[in-house]
Structures are given as C-alpha cells and as structure tokens.
Length: 295
Image (cartoon, rainbow, N blue to C red):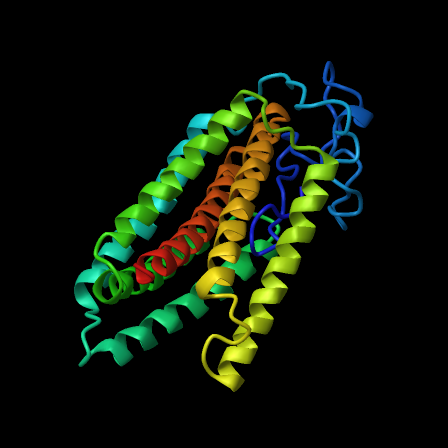
C-alpha cells in the first residue's frame, strides 16, 4: 500500500521468494484478485492503483492459507519493540550526555539538528527501498532518538519538568485508544478514509513548511501556527492526524498478515509504526509545551 506515515512514500508489502504479499496474485483457495486490494499493483509500479479501490463496501482482508516464512503479529511486535527500544535508549543517552544548559545549549542543539537530518535521510532512503533493511531502520531509530532526547531535555529544562512525561503518556493513550477502536471496528479504513487522511496530512505538512520559512526569514513564529491559540489548534490537528496514521498502519499490518507477506516485511511495519509514534509524540510535546507555557 502507499504510505501511511509522515514521509508519505513508504512502500507497502510485496511478493518475495514465492510468498504472497500485498502485490502478489492469490494462491489456490485464496480470494479472487478483485477481493485483494493490492492485486492490481505491478513490480514496476506498485502504486499504479489505489490500494483501497476495492475496500469501500468490504471491510477487512480475507485470510490467506498459512505459509511458512510468512509475517505474524509476533514478528511485528518484536521488531517494533526493537525499533522503539532503540529510539528510547538513544534518547535517554542523549538526554544524559548532551546537556542543554546555557553553556552547552548551542552545541547540543547543533548535534540534535544534525541527528534529525540524518534520521530524515535514512527514513527517505528506506521509504524508497524495495525491501526493508533492518540496519537502516535501526540506524534511523538511533539518530531519531538523539534528536528526541535533546528536544525533550530542553522542554523539561526550560518549560516544565512534567511536560515530557505527559507527552509520553499522551502518546501511549493515543496508541491504545486507536488500537481498541480499530479492533472493535469503530474505525473503518476505506479508500475514502485513506484519501482524506493523506490529503489532510499533505496540506498540514505544507502549511508547517510555509510557517517555518516565514519564521526563518521573518523571525519569531512565522505565521503563528506554532504558538498561542493557533498553535494549540494545529497541535490538536497534528495529534489527530497521527491517530489516523496509526489506523492506516494497523490496516497495513492486518492485510500483510492476512495475505501472507514475507516475515522480513515485519521490519517495514515496525518502521511505519515508529514513524507514526514519533510524529504523535512530537505533536503532543509541542501542544503540551504551549499549554504549560501559558500557565
């Protein structure tokens, strides 16, 4: 499927070594091609068709016959734990080793920005790779953790010591809430849902980029989308978009398991979930920073 994450270009699961993935033809006893929302993609252009073209009236993916070497939910949980664990570990180390006091603030910020740029490049490389690379994904997680550790430390030092823990708890609550809503089928991931979320996300990111350019060349907060009332509004929108990305990620994982995606694709699921959780945490941290800063 197409991306369900802020990088917007993460590849979906694919056929590998004879194991049916999202773009594979159905096996004997499996549903017809029309019932597989990914059956019409090609190796040359896996995004030739909308991944939810057949999903408007039929929710959920049919179960494919079990195959050895196919991805399972345990694989996804294990790889996601490894990826998120790397983020948390490097964030804790950067918090401890990169102080944000007045004497070291500039140096620590410089390292954090550099780490963020490296993480972005690694994420984009993985997004365009045909197959997931565990080393690349874990390297992305490590550099992302450095950035998050410094930013979190700065927020804790200069805004409110409790803001970081509130953001962590808020991110966990959003994850749990979306997971429950998805499992209870309160959220239906259809073509219309997918299109709305992606259009909203593209608009949101473009608006934030314009605001960043105004802030760089005009000083202050640019158009004011990162502070005050507008900052709170766009922070809430950012968290909601992150929750929608989670629903798309859960759908992708569910379809990958049901259609027998190769086990290595669980790294792709871990990558996507990590991207989304980082998005939610950053938006939650910014939103709480504005609220606590106004106290």
